[in-house]
Length: 355
Image (cartoon, rainbow, N blue to C red; front, top):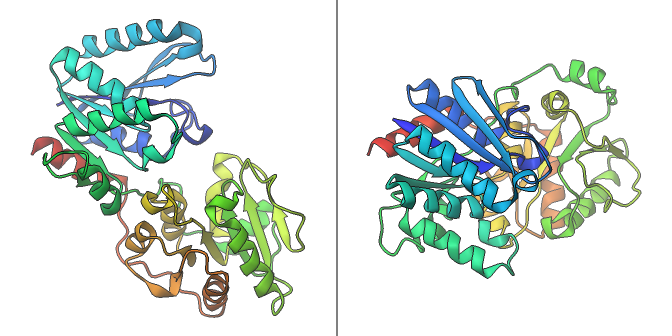
């Protein structure tokens, strides 16, 4: 089949054309490997010039809102999609691309698929017109896929009895594999002998990081050699704290060794409109590296970990999180059963397209 994916060019500040990353890159690539003819049309708003390249069996096209204006961007995207003559148009990565995919599919009389990895309605909650357009795209799509069952159930409520939403889970990118811990610490200049716990991403109270900091302080009272390794762009909200090693924003190639250097990877979320439907990629990455994980027990995270209680602490429970991390430092556990990769997720998506 001929598939066109429509999405944003820079998820997590990563240029999908220049820096392969995550669901929006690997699902199209793995579907192309299954024999589909795949084109990915990506939109940006940072002044990037238009681009058209063939990589990994996929035709990647990029257009920019600031360079072309809204009408010019829509005209370019429409021309590219019409020229490809797809069997399916797939909206990915944000609510506005569900709307755009629906608009294109209606204009071409083409089947529509919508893929969601988060609860997009938790973003910009004030933007009710966009959320209405998103719900319409979910309602009208021939196929809707979600990163996990909790999000699938939410989206099913927008389907008005339509075909059931299907689960296509998250996975780790291929560079996240088990590595020699000591070698990774040497590579990154991390302490060789200190116990290291790690957190990646922005430091924000609404994600439960205040509770995480309380847990870290509690553990350090009995383990003064414990270090907390932080990486990410937005660490400005992190107060000066003894034992914290702030790495800042790291190059893509440094992230897998950073995860592999840890004794415990911490995945902190919160019981919010976002957190209740979030399936963290960082959790997949830590599991793929064979690293013990201490995580907030939201329903999506509990599902991703198969209910393994040794890795879970209830949202907002600083004492429980402290106990969870301490237990994994004393008795490491990293047996997560059979881990699936992006090729597996692509096969699930392929099966739904054919169905």
